[in-house]
Structure formats: C-alpha cells, structure tokens
Amino acid sequence: MAEKQNATRRDALLARIEGNASQALDFVGWIFQGLDIPDNANIVECCCGTGKQTLEFARRLTPGSRIHAFDIEQKSLDYLTGQLDEAVRDRVEARRLDFNDFEAVTAAFPDRIDLFFCSYGLYYNKDFARLLGLVRDRLSETGRITVVGPYGRNNDELFSFLQACGVGIDDYIVYTAQRFMADVVNWMSDNLKDVRSTTERNPVAWDSADKVFGYWENSTFHDPALRDAVAERLAEHFRTHDTFINCKYLMKATATMILP
Image (cartoon, rainbow, N blue to C red; front, side):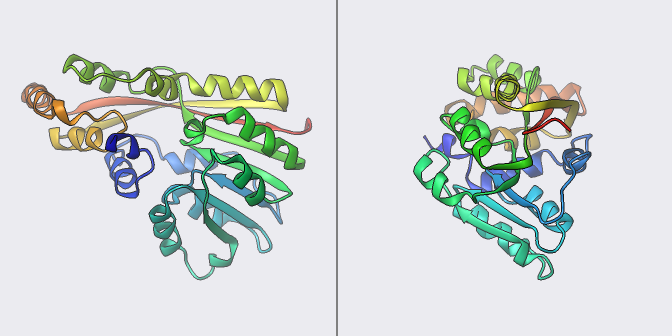
C-alpha cells in the first residue's frame, strides 16, 4: 500500500517534520543534550532520513571523526547531502542501505563503532535485536548505542480521534508508537551496561484542520477511503476549538559496553 511507503518516502517524511513544527520541545536540542561525542569518533546512524540529526552530528564532530549515515530512501539521502556545508562534507558518508538485508548491513558497517544512533526508525527493522547484536559486536571498548523513539501514550489524542472517524490503526503501528522502546530498553539491559533512559512529553498544537489532515495524510495510518469522514469531523472540532493538541511522548535510551 502507498500509505505504508509514507514511512520512508522523502516528501512524506518532510511533511511530517513540517507538521510537527509547532511542537513545544526543541527536539534536536533534546536529543543532543548529554550526548557526548568523543574525538576521532566513528558514528553509525541508521534510518537517517533527510538528515536533521546527521547535520547536527556533522557540525559537532571534531576533525578526523566520521558519521556513516544510512537510509533505504535514496531521495532522502540526496536531500541530506544537498544540505551539507563544504566545511563538514568530508565528515559525512551517506549511503543507501536496507536494514533488513543483514548481509548488506554486515558489509556496510565499519569494524569499529564508537556510537550507534537511531532516531525514530529502528522499529522499521524486522529483527531489531539481531541488528543491535551486530552493532554490539563492533562497538569500541567505550562505544555506545543510543536509540530515540516514541513510547507510552504517544499519539493517543490523534489515534482516538481517527478511530472515532472509523480509521483502523494497525496493531503494529500502535506497538511501534507506544511499546517498542520498552523492548529496546529490555534488550539493552540484557546485552549491555549502564543503561539509561530519558523521557519527555512534547505537545504538538495544530492550529488548523488542514495541518492535522496533512500530517495524517503523510502518515503510515492514512486511509484515503475515510478522507471525507475525517475532514468533516476536523471541521466540527475547529468550530469550537482553536487548536488540536496531540501529545508526543519521547524516550532516549543509551547503553555502553563497559561501566563508566
């Protein structure tokens, strides 16, 4: 289905990012808070998308460091490389990679990884534990894995609204949006050390029906057969409300090879 492709398609991804522009939290700032990057770092970022975090990594890296940014969508990678300043271009290697092709992953990943990073994308892997196990085997002595994703009551308001319109929210979508990060933390606890997690509540306030509709239209749970029903209910909502508030719940989980 075309809607499933919205997970990785560049234009859909950019539309969702724009749709979250009214969020209360400085998302990138929150990600990098406390995320120390060592000198001469070898960083792997999976599911880098259009590169919002990749660009920030590139700015923060010291000379001699490198970030290997991977994504399945070539158009997103082209967008990322087009945003790179000349001063940091040689610090970034952006390559297309299907993370469900473990033979390709094994060949593409560097032998030494100082930081493995993934934000809102690890749940697209059919066997995230196998992927993280491969990464663990290549972590340097002080290497870390950091995963960012949604958890808990994330998207409850939007899910409830859409379900009231008849939109079916797939169980897997609910799992990735609300429960997946708990499985990541459990894996870290079983396989790594010094597991730490930070959480944040991040309300997004949409001030028009078009903005809510646009976000849904570019989501993985869009159902074109119910566009009229959703549009009608959104119009009804905005007759009595100035905004539609949908709360994002974020988790950043980090673990290391050895205790500090």
